Image (tube, rainbow, N blue to C red; front, top):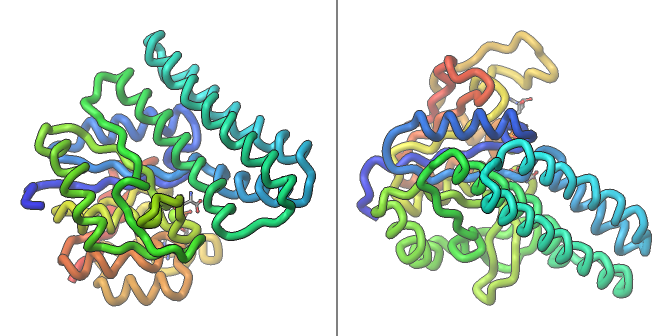
Length: 303
Ligand code: ADP
Ligand code: ASP
Ligand code: MG
């Protein structure tokens, strides 16, 4: 894409879970100079809740589905109220969430009649997590005066139709990125995009597997020929062991692409297993960083 100096910054669910965390994300983005693509996950637990909603609807338990939906929708409205102070922006943000609420409620109704849950329908539910979080973050960023444009990853990340674990078509996605992402970066806009999701050539929503927003960041890194892919999460970097099993695991300063791929393949949740390949192919370093501890230098994954 010949846009030198682009940095992809991905923020996971715990980094965008509430208004305090999002405020922190906005500061991190503001304090990072250069051309930026920001990839965001759904707010924590949103994707799992959307799966619960879909399963309840398919089991004809519309009451339970609607109850769960209310909760997740309300979390987004609370964040808007706390972060988006300018009245026209607040109204626009709330309107987006109200619209998504309506769309999910329609899906619940339809699914309770069909009474059968396919992976394609499950993806249709799941994408709302990232659609909602990215909209809330977009309006919060506008409220803070950031020069940001929100794009829809369904327009850029074109995938096969292997629903729930779709894989991107890099050639097709490159054409879309050159058309959609490149002009925005050239205008010095921060490009804000959803992780996890894409769409088939026909535009049907897909997701690339649970926790795959890291992979999305690597895809955007490849498509923009980025200088660096930053994965902002809730630990100081890649640790020698899963900290949930070994609490005093040590942080690695550097790790090779190959070793990282092996760790991810063995289930290290800190980086989705598909993330290394696109980065390795274009020799783009991946940095794992802690959004709650920006003083830490993190872990660099490189060749
Ligand atoms: P995010 O929501 O930012 O994507 P994840 O929960 O998916 O964050 O990934 C970060 C988590 O991965 C950490 O909180 C940690 O519990 C877990 N983890 C598992 N193995 C490792 C490891 N080897 N190094 C660091 N974190 C690990
Ligand atoms: N929101 C998705 C999930 O919870 C993707 C991600 O967070 O990486 O699986
Ligand atoms: Mg993750």
